[in-house]
Image (tube, rainbow, N blue to C red; front, side, top):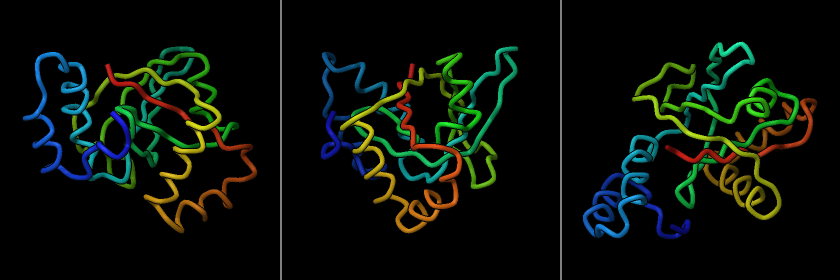
Length: 152
């Protein structure tokens, strides 16, 4: 699914779900799982230490092409943990990280080039001046890194 076709709100999602046929069930189930994130600013990203202990971090995100993208910095703990274990769980959350929805399992991967640039642009569009401010404040933590999360 391309970005132009991704629903902007729950009503558009409902219309798209009704239009799906049996041949497109995978996309249907992914959109159903993404529904709880549509009108949210934050998600809680659960990553895992080498010991298996979970660590939850509230992050900004954007959605396109049935994937969730998170922009962060290369010297952060979540990047280190994802390099060791690509399994993650996500849930919509408040600014302070309190989960407000169900936890969904996924796989995180690092993306580069055009896909990463598109995610960065979408994050800037979604969060505006706050994204630019966050880029400035976190610049000492290395270069920007973009994670894609595919829901399971």
